[in-house]
Image (cartoon, rainbow, N blue to C red; front, side, top):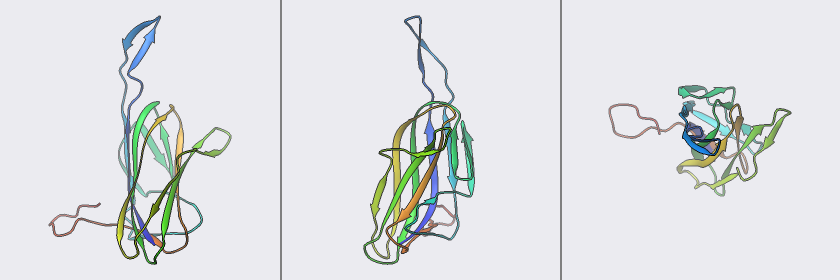
Length: 168
């Protein structure tokens, strides 16, 4: 199985409603978003969990990124997508993705964050790891990926037959 990291897209906002002395009050918030991506030709995925560490970012607003760690400047609900383009080079391949949160005294796996995806041999598969989550201000998150063996690669794909390069 072969997989290639396409991009991470995060977006969300802080709490827009506050209660002051029992009175409802609208509070302004700053939305958070970031795109992190890696356009390497291929990235091998093994049976050992590997930190997803995109090489580049753009459009960062309220979420920072460094060495595989995303830090949320504001708390609140977020919609996130981790998208990888996977290619299996043998039958019976799967990939797995999960996340961890920095507790302040170390990293802890986030229960219910695991996703499993079956892949078809020789077929490029766009895997979308999507969640609606709540993050706290200052929370640090990182994502891990692995496969059931060494026949998965992440690949960079583009849309066919157009004059400009458009990454998938």
